[in-house]
Amino acid sequence: MRILAGTCALAAFALSGLSAVADPADDTLVVNGEIQMITHTDKAPDYIDGLSEQYSGWHFREADTRVMQADDFDNPGMLGVEAATEVWNAVDGSEGKACASCHEAPESMAGVRTQMPSFNEAKGEMYTMEMYINECRAERMGAEAWDWDSSDMVNMTALISSVSRGMPMNVAVDGPAQSYWEKGKEMYYTRYGQLELACSNCHEDNYGNFIRADHLSQGQINGFPVYRLKDAKLSSIHNRFKGCIRDTRGETFKPGSPELIALELYVASRGNGLSVEGPSVRN
Ligand code: HEC
Ligand code: HEC
Image 1 (tube, helix red, strand yellow):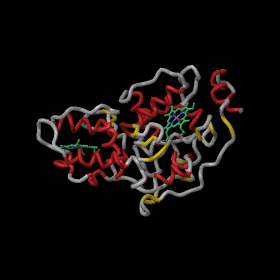
Image 2 (cartoon, rainbow, N blue to C red):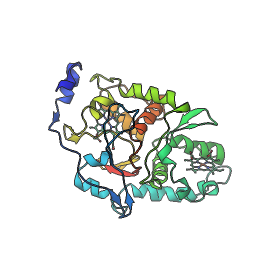
Image 3 (cartoon, rainbow, N blue to C red):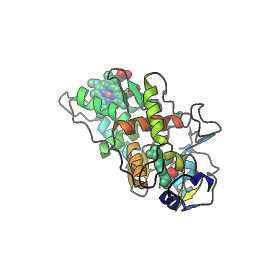
Image 4 (cartoon, rainbow, N blue to C red):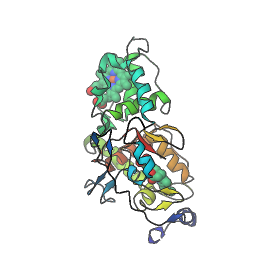
């Protein structure tokens, strides 16, 4: 319990639910018998001080949940991918265009997820996948932007992620990305809420431990969007961040806010080298 020194009494109370360490499941993930997933590495990138090795959240889930992700017929997140494939081909907006008019098949997006979020040179800003999608809808299709957490948006991010499955995450952290990365890193180590807990207190200091019934993972985002069995739907990265901050009884940030965009870049970089898994299955 040494790690608790210096945190307030409430935090100690919250983490008193911590119990025995359970190793991440010793298991390998091959999807549809063909996509080999890198779910564990022996070494995190050099610029991540707090992790010696990387684990996908997949290793911390129960066997039945892990198995669901190994076959597209069992992965409920793939229903979102199917729905988005129809939307991909459907004309929408004043310009009479579909995604397919300019991007051909969804497979043309292979590799895109590995680099998200990325600096949008034309806009001079860090852009998440949601922002690129809405830029195309609003500025190129004359269609309405989608809400960040709408099913259309989350399904489309699942489709675009799915064609990069197996490829290692590889977000840029230098050049114009660096200031966002620094800001995200600072947030990662900032204590939030009445419980005064930082992301790092749970996902760096305590991964492998149980917090109440939950086996704590490294809080990686290579699996997003994630199909959460608890909610029976796909969930975006920012929605997950929001929930984790809320759980510290903290005032949380809005999906799409500059804070969560910077945090997304930093957290993505902690997973550089792990395979894209989205849509993954978690509880
Ligand atoms: C009128 C043509 C057009 C349409 C229609 C269109 N896009 Fe795009 N899209 C572009 C262009 C041009 C870019 C920028 C490419 C670049 O700069 O590399 C882009 C970029 C993107 C990117 C970022 C890719 C990357 O490599 O960073 C995503 C994701 C994307 N579009 C998704 C969509 C989706 C989803 C739809 C349908 C809802 C759509 N686009 C509709 C033209 C279009
Ligand atoms: C009080 C402990 C706690 C704190 C603090 C916390 N989380 Fe979590 N987080 C959890 C638990 C519990 C889960 C569900 C089990 C798991 O995957 O670790 C979770 C899950 C996640 C996941 C999903 C991982 C996956 O593979 O599906 C992400 C991403 C995440 N957290 C990011 C964050 C970020 C970023 C912060 C800081 C803003 C944060 N968390 C703060 C407890 C915490």
